[in-house]
Length: 424
Ligand code: PA5
Image (cartoon, rainbow, N blue to C red; front, top):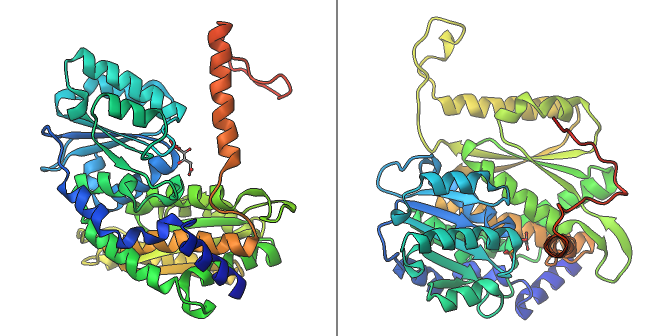
């Protein structure tokens, strides 16, 4: 812990861990709160992938879940996240959306990501064809200087926010990448920052027992390296935290899955995170967790109070005894039952308990996970803030497309792989 603490503290001071200071960045918050679109916005479409999508999605799904429904609800805009090259969703949206009331938030830290740029170029063409000004219908969130997206925004006078160069994609949820879409959907970003800031202070404690991030990291690494529990299942008992589960998976996998230690020793190390949600996945994963290989550690997130109260309706059937109870009580009972069942089979779990899922608690939870990742990287001995594997995949995808454009044949997958084609 002493070494890990020293290294994390040093990385914060040197600016290597840029996300650490975001909770106290009031000027960022004011800039976001001051900005308003030049048009009336009914639809927000976020074009971005990985860290440029998952964080904003986690916040908006948790705190503004009505707005993710397919039709505008109430006065706030509906929001879509397009984070896949698969053209289906984009094509559907472009067919159905009223473009005159749509704002496209284009997010890419590098400004050069294939998925995001191909989607953006198609959107740009549609907006231009409809005579809609790009500067009013688009907003860029990208590197302050570099990358193609930055160039495009400058060229078309599209307003922009910055991704600080020392904040990696999967750590950018509390930068404009996460805060701006959240604010546009009516989330209180001051409260998000407040919650994150209070957690940040706790995560700066030099003693393991007093530092929730270090403690959680130590627990995970200990179970992995000493008990071979290399699969880390993230299971919030909250439908609103589904996207947070996916965000956590990216954070944990990309930061900790590394070929070598910081001093060059080859280890091919990294836990395998699994995204799930309770109670839904009690009916899919739980059997495996209970009786399958003893290689998993489960993290539950328990929200003590519901975001919405809903009483169980009177009925004559087997639920008779539950009349007058809240649906949330059912959810908590299921969490309690699952945890107890695991414990009886000697399967370990951790529970992160929050009073209620609101902006402050979510800010704290998100910061806790990022700080835990920083400490876990120290305990594993790996560098948390690069992703050479992801970068190689991006480069090779571009190469494949370039080859296909010079030799116009459909790109072929490597012949060394076993392939099964389903041709009908
Ligand atoms: O965490 C990361 O660094 C990656 O997952 C990126 O977020 C992802 O590849 C998208 O990159 P960019 O934001 O540069 O478009």
